[in-house]
Amino acid sequence: MKPLALVVVACVVGWLAFQTFQSTPLDPKAVSRAVEARGDLASDEQNTIDIFRNTAPSVVYITSIAVRRNLFSLNVYEIPQGTGSGFIWDKQGRIVTNYHVISDANRLEVTLADHSSWKAVLVGAAPDRDLAVLQISAPADKLRPIAIGESKNLLVGQKVFAIGNPFGLDQTLTTGVVSALGREITAATGRTIHDVIQTDAAINPGNSGGPLLDSAGRLIGVNTAIYSPSGASSGIGFAVPVGEVNRVAPQIISKGKLIRPGLGITLANRRLTDELGLEGVMVLKVQPGSTAEKVGLRGATQVREGLVLGDVILAVNGKAIQDYDTLRDELERHEVGESVTLTLMRDSSTVEVKVALEAMN
Image 1: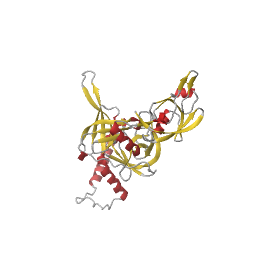
Image 2: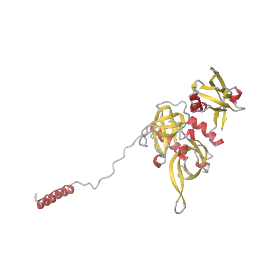
Image 3: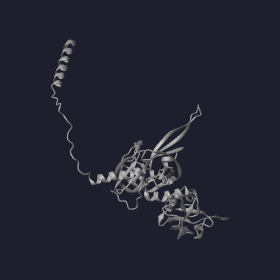
Image 4: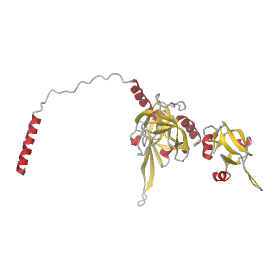
């Protein structure tokens, strides 16, 4: 087809389209549609709304700020390094969050639900539990402590709710269920955190340190980690159980750190026990005045003929001990002052000794 003919066809098509548009009927009396009455919210919807309204004022937004120096001008400047979540612990302005949220910060800032911002200082931390406590100077009337629940009687399938600041979007609510119980995750220190709650409530970067709630709006865990190849939520999130939080936070507030239960002993290193072909962990020294000394635990002794082996700890309360980490994990399931039963290998015989745990530095 020749170019002139193409132009003519295009003009005809355009004119027909214009005529069609012009012939579309218009109604100058058009008005908005009437709104149909919705009716009452479903009970579970109303419960979710109530949980958010009641708990959101207890959730905070944490910004960790790093200090940098310009290499040319030597001027010092601050840059936001990361964000996370937390929640108000008490009327004195203490804030609980994850240790990894604040671990590398030079300065910390906490933003409350009313958008007021406050400088925060670190009270203390338990890195092995990925928990930390901050302090802000906000007045008591701005602080609504979160309601504390329990985690020991949770059931898979229970509804849960997470409030936090994923990707910096503060006061975000996500919902889900308890997907599994008794999981294990690894803290930044490499230590294992036991009895962790798994949930499919969406948890993303920025949710760390925020609360996981039950259907009564009570704290049951601290959202801590996700399993995700992409770094975004894949429906597998983990929360440190509130039982652990309620045990650790008061110790941090009163002592600045987690008080560890121990036996008052020094253990032989793994290489030595492997060379000796021993199972468990061997007591190398017993500290004078310790509870271990009081119940007669024996350390290794050096004699002319060689090394006389100390007691070898095979189990704690029936749980097999392979190395120092498993011994420490088992002891830390108990409080200072509680007693545990040690199964020992002593002089080629197996004996059991009951010993009270003492506070260790």
